[in-house]
Amino acid sequence: MPKQSTKMSGVQCLATENIWFDKRCYDEAEKCFYEGANGPTSQSSSHAGGDQELVSRMKSMELENHTLHKVVEEMRAALQKLESRVVVLEKSPAAVTCVKVAPVKQVKVENDDDDIDLFGSDEDDEEAERIKQERIDSYAAKKSKKPTLIAKSSILLDVKPWDDETDMGKLEECVRSVQMDGLLWGAGKLVPVGYGIKKLQINCVVEDDKVGTDILEEEITKFEDYIQSVDVAAFNKI
Image 1 (cartoon, rainbow, N blue to C red):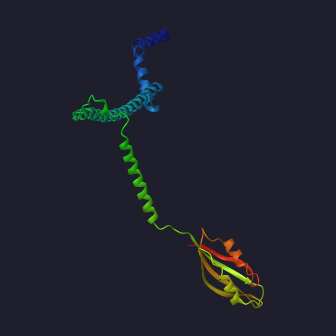
Image 2: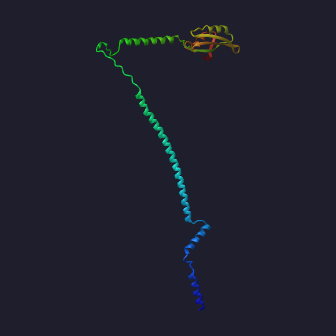
C-alpha cells in the first residue's frame, strides 16, 4: 500500500511537467549549441556556397558590362569618323558642280566643199617632217662635237734574249721599231735574269680597239735573231 502511493505520486509529478510539450524548443536550443561548438551545419555551408557563387557571377557580369561599354564607345568613334567622311564626300560633288564650264565655241562650217579638208593638208605633213629632220640633224651635230672616250691599256712586256752575248741595245731598238696606230712606247730597263743574262722590261700604252697583245707579241718576235720570247708582265686598263 505504501509503494502504490509512492508510484502514484511520481506519475502525478510527471503529469505536472510540460517538457514534452516544449520539445521543439529544446531541439532548436540543442542545434544552436552544436553549431556554436562545431561550426554551421551542411545546410548553412550550402547557403554560404550559394552566396559566393552569386557574388562571382555578379563580378563576371560587371566585367562583361564594362567590356561591352568599351566596345560600344569604339563603335561610336568609328561611326563618327565614317559620318565625317560621308559629309566630305557629299560636299565634293557639290564643289565640282559649282565649277563653271566654259562654253564650247561653235565652229561655223561653210557650205563650200573646197574649204573642207577631211584628211589634213599635205603642207602640214611636209612642215612636220621638216621640223623632225631639223631636230635629228641638230642632235647629230651636238653628238659629233662631244669627245668620244677611247679605251686604253698600259702593258708591261718582258722581252728575253737568246743568251748573254745578245746585244741588248740592238734588241731594244728592234722592239721600238714596231710602230702601229694606237701604240705608244714608254720607258724600258734591263733586269737581270741569271747566269749573266738580262731581259728588257719595257712599257707601252695601246688603244684597245686598235692594238691587241697577240699582234704586238707577233710583231716583236719577228726579230728572231735577237729576241727569244715576249711575255706580258702586267696589264692595266687606263
